[in-house]
Image (cartoon, rainbow, N blue to C red):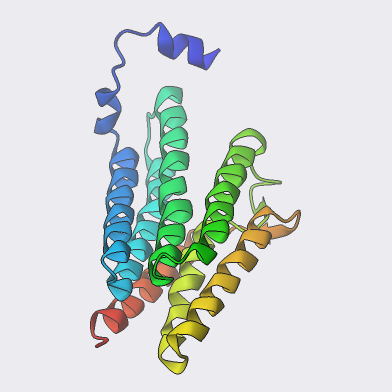
Length: 213
């Protein structure tokens, strides 16, 4: 019904929805993710993790902003949900895959895992778009944004291992997270108060990685 109305509503153009603040926030997160992908390819892994953590901030912020605004139409909400989902596949599917592939020096042994990570992210987001959450506080499976938060923490310990050992460690960690992403388990959705904890964590990790030599 809504799709038909949008199609027949000539007053709504694609660029019209750029005036929506939550969508601007989402696109800023996309920019952060693209910077993270670029930095991963360049081998600047510390800075790549900083970039993608800020994309998580923007991903959480767009929903908070959307819920606080008055007068948003169903069209804005529907476009916002679709945009958010498409950006998530880049931020939390493509980015960790490129990060792993680059860190693994593009060795073919990493390709199966990279494919599974991207495919798993696509399956999870497709499932979520159809079925949504179990209830307002509960996800089915681990939400994808947790993957890069956990990756940024695990990478702190890189210096404790040889390159060969640590590349296998993050390979295994990312595949275990993929299993949790798709598992039929109940995971709690962090409320708005956790947003401030995420900001503190992101700032501290950003400072740490920015000053790491």
